[in-house]
Length: 172
Image (cartoon, rainbow, N blue to C red; front, side, top):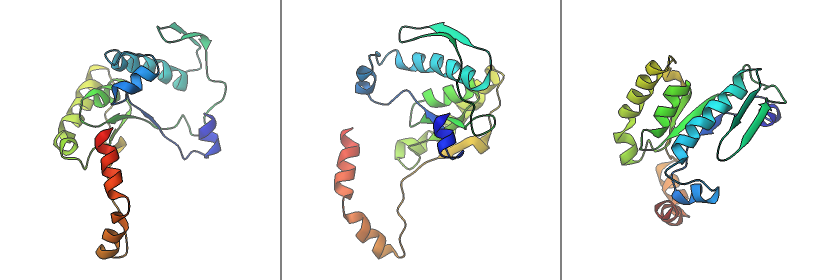
């Protein structure tokens, strides 16, 4: 809510379970539990974002007692919330169940392009199951690109650091 005010509404919230097992380990969650944890936590988060009613819940990771937001959002009713997806259907399942937008991060990767249709099918199916609306206007497709005045300039620009960038991505 504070970031929403600081940016005067130029913020959206992206949710995802994390693609790497070390991410889960660093915060003390088993990689086998992180998707279920994210589903429950999203339910709690959306309650906090959309209801004035306090919520009390205790999980293995936290305890909330009569919790509520202390600050209203700048955006009305709140910033857009999207679930991230690369290849697996986890993000689309989350988006459909909770009525969130979807952000397909790997849309320019071969594996990412191959699953785009499946992602949206999962969003629509889960939305129907949970009485939510699947809205294609809330689906973002993300891919890397570089813009320059000419193709030669673009190639010259990306020569600097492209090998290191690709190496980094392949090893994470």
